[in-house]
Amino acid sequence: MSSTAEQRKAGAIVELLNSRPHATPLLPDTLASPETAAQILRPFGLPDGELPTAEQLDRVRTLRGDLMAVVDAGDDTDAAQTAWTRLNQQAAEVSFQYALSVAGRTQLRQVAGDPVIGGIIRALADLQAANLWSRIRACANDLCSHVFYDTTRSRTQRWDSYETCGNRVNVAAYRARSRPSRPAVSGR
Ligand SMILES: [Zn+2]
Image 1 (spheres, rainbow, N blue to C red):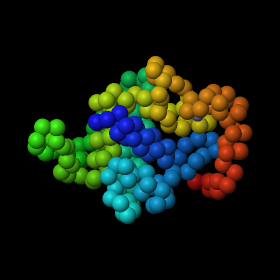
Image 2: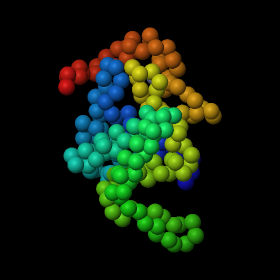
Image 3: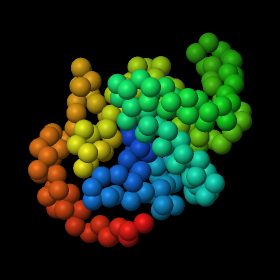
């Protein structure tokens, strides 16, 4: 797998995680819009022109929550263990099989389970195999908590944007400025 393919997978995972409701003021769940959900899930194998089903979205939301729990666990090994156990339960619902052929052409094919869930699990497994999973981090500013891909050599980047989130007092003003047309979130 080329590093470009890896970056694309990382980018798709970051988009998926950022579809969750997060930040203050709250950004709503963007999977609620079928068109946006389709865009977010296309890189994981949702066929072109198809919209995700309600059942599929329920599964994706559960998986998204478990993935986010892994990211949030950070150095807390107990929390990480719990989160990985839950992810393994999700992974158990999909099966893959190697299709062997001419050298270099061997492919891993999904043979059971929801294709989108399988695509997300595969992206996770590929990022882990490439030692890139730990680059997916959540912004340390709890008003933001946006997920980002840490490109630093040391993997110690704390904020998705130093300019806005490295300086806590700027955040509320920035949010207000950058999302003027965002509809009000109803209190649920
Ligand atoms: Zn941030």
